Length: 161
Image (cartoon, rainbow, N blue to C red; front, side):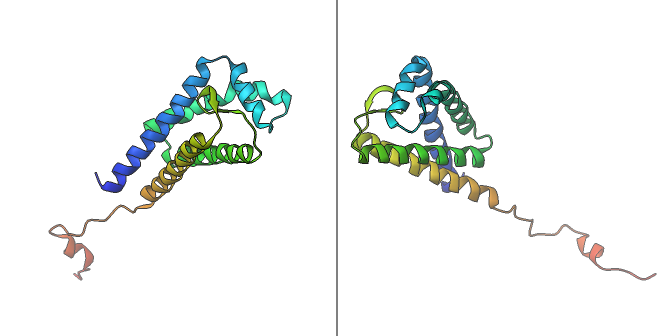
């Protein structure tokens, strides 16, 4: 296994494991707890809080499993990058506005602050790196054999009878 493929594997396992764990923690708590964290960001209307709080953890769980398995890696990594990028931008916005809210990333009780911002920023970087690596790995052409078997030369020359 090449170094690049090894790094892609490690990045994919870290990313998938973190997303899987985040979903697991949210699913173990009552949905209303996650809805309260979402409400703190002030970006969803009241009537959207319940469906998002009930659905998003299941989507994260599926994404975590997909990343861990390596199935549809390019697309699952791209989705993870977009999702985490959006979440991170909402965290930056909320922190800049001075909101004292729960991050909501790993369930209740985690205040939004410099540590959560650093952790999630690094997670976005890992997601982007995995996405780039997955797309590059897919693009590499399969090398054709460089040797010819005995008798191949005769097939390329036409003979007259």
